Image (cartoon, rainbow, N blue to C red; front, side, top):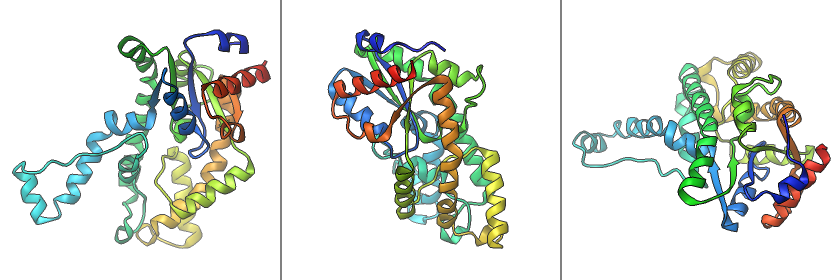
Amino acid sequence: MTLPTAQDWRATTEKRVLLFGMSGLGKTHLSNTLRAAGDWFHYSVDYRIGTRYMGEHIVDNFKREAMRNPFLAELLRSDSIYIASNITFDNLAPLSTYLGKPGDPARGGLPFEEYMLRQQQHRTAEISALLDTAHFVRRAKDLYGYGNFVCDSGGSICEVVDPQDPADPVLTALSQTALMVWIEDTAEHRDALVARFDRAPKPMYYEPGFLRTHWAEYLREHRLDETGVDPDAFIRWMYARALAHRRPRYKAMAENWGVTVQARDVAEVRDEAGFNDLIARALEARG
């Protein structure tokens, strides 16, 4: 892997970066800051997943729920109403709602194997959306004249790649397209993320082996069958474990494929110049 020097980074008129790390550490903050500068194209992997690759699954789920209501069911059958997902860069709730949570159906849970099917759909979609990055770099340049490009990746990127494999197809494609930048957290950040998640737990994607192992552990530890699981309690229990699972994977991605910046420094970025300084310092530190 060959990284640009800090001097090269400052000099180029076509800067391309992919931001990765846990949700809540500043990926979208940086992306929005750069987009607001006026000459950066913002590519959101989660938005691409929710529109291009899982949009039909999401809308079909809405329709399935609507069909339970006789009034809405009749209108749907006669094509008298239209149901769509209003997913945006800032509101990805339709995607996370579709992913769902396993457990007691009376408390909004999904049967575990249905949950795993949706997880697999997300995995396939995420890989495809990540591999679309190069296409959007070209599209941004050819259609809109944007030379600068920022890819806002989902927090689960580390679950669909092998950062230790020098031939990993997704990381190879991404690193050839953009500078990969890990936003590194601290213990304090992790405590804050856990507290935030505890207040508002939301569905996530997990690597399937990790998920199945911890699901079995949760059932055993709490002496439950799957219909007795409180879905929110399970994903709260999983979150801190997911943080611990993901951090070394992010770290390996940065060490083998990119550079690292600190979340506390990201929070101080207010404009494009500040971002460029942040990346230049990371490149200098990398040597």
